[in-house]
Length: 147
Image (cartoon, rainbow, N blue to C red; front, side):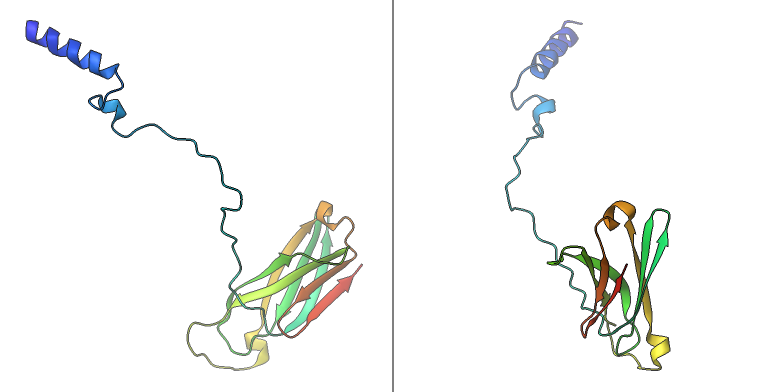
């Protein structure tokens, strides 16, 4: 009985100390580190611009507007298309870049209709405040809609 009492006393005394013998101290505590300014990696979109933008439509809805753009790549197989908002030097102009990933291996050309890619984006009423033109750019040019 005395051994158990001594062992319990030792375990309890070690649990309360800050030594390495305390199992609760083996992995250390969480450390707060201040964020370093500029330490974040700038993420850039590696997808190329759609070679040709052929159609642009803006449809109003109660919550804002839906932007729909269609492009034709040179070959079939382009995927992961998206309208990516980019900064505009002009006030009142919302600029989007039409980007898509080219096929990973050689593909056929076929008809332009079969190669069409249609993508969309939405702008809220708050985002539309002060915007008088929406522009979607591709590699060979841009289409725009004014309101």
